[in-house]
Length: 296
Image (cartoon, rainbow, N blue to C red; front, side, top):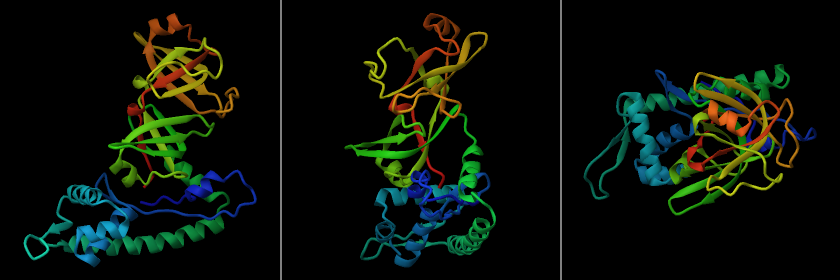
């Protein structure tokens, strides 16, 4: 599979018409319906091949020792057969080797990536606005059970003793905060300027009637508080689906192009809060309820 897209820096500066546009992309391999790995995991396999050591390979590709073994375990499991073999014994405690299947996988990936580069060059030259359109096609084609699939750019990474706090700026500027493990930050390549998407189930989103002073955050423990205007209320037998168009970060009212977040609440809550099309409300959810993902 391939994912041609502009780099994070280019995506962040797409509003600058004077900046040169370059088309980028990535390739990843699948085993059946499961994604086996992209450039980062194949690079790890190649480093293991070249060094014969998981420790040296991890350093070569900028991974922690644990993250490298986690990636190896995932690849072995998804392939349905070993790709990396641990050797026991020896002065250094044994080495790490690749199976013939892993060697073929690296060769296949390199060949596909070479052809992918040629494809990108041809497509970029032939199709206007190819980079942005192809990236969008990839995002809207994503399948997940989470009702809310929100795209943004990482604006802050705060390292903690156990977990990291990642802030994602939505297109309108309002932030979403997620708490993830160090390994997830590293594996997903979450750094300032990197594009990512946030998944939030509608049942995890609470709504609060906006009867407070504009711009004043609610006094709640939940980190994410996104203000906006109700655009749709769809009632069911017990629950209702409420969609909220988000304000811009500068306090501007939402428009037809605003990011929309959806919550599932009871019909009784809709009536109690007076939620109807055009009323203002705040969507509230915990940082631990946010799942982050990247295209590669």
